[in-house]
Length: 178
Image (cartoon, rainbow, N blue to C red; front, top):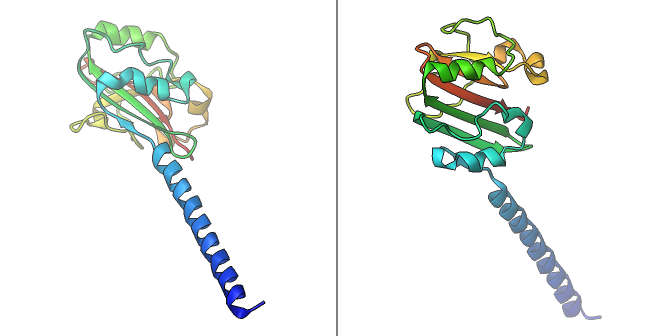
C-alpha cells in the first residue's frame, strides 16, 4: 500500500474518532441541560412543584392546596434528585386557629418549644426577598431523618414554622443530597 492511502485512512479514522467524541459530548451536554432542575417561586405553580417532589412521603404535612383565605403567599421549590437534593417551602399569612390546627396534626421532636423560641438556624431557604428565618419557631416533624440529623443542621428536614405573632405559617422540606 502506498503511503498516501495509509495516511488517508489514518486521517479518516482520526476525523471519525474526533467527530464521535464531539457527538457524545454534545449528547451529554444536552442531557445535562434538559435534566437540570427548575426553580418554582410563583404560588400558581404550587401543584406542579408539589407533584415533582421525589420525596412525596416527606411532604405530606404540606396542605393539599393553598387555603383560599391565605394571604401574602410565598413559595420556593426546587428538585434535583438524586444529585443536589430538593427543597420546598410554602409560607403564608393566616389566622391563629388554622396554625393551631396544623400544629396539632403532627408529632414534633421539639413539641415543647414555645412560640417565639429561637434556635440557631443552619439553613432555611427564602420563599421571598424580605424573609427573615429568625422570625420563626421551627417544629421538626418526628421522623427517622429528623432523629439522625445533627443539631448544628437545625431545622432539617421537614416541619412547620410559626412566626412570633402567630399569623404566618411556613411549611418546609429540605432534603440535602449529602
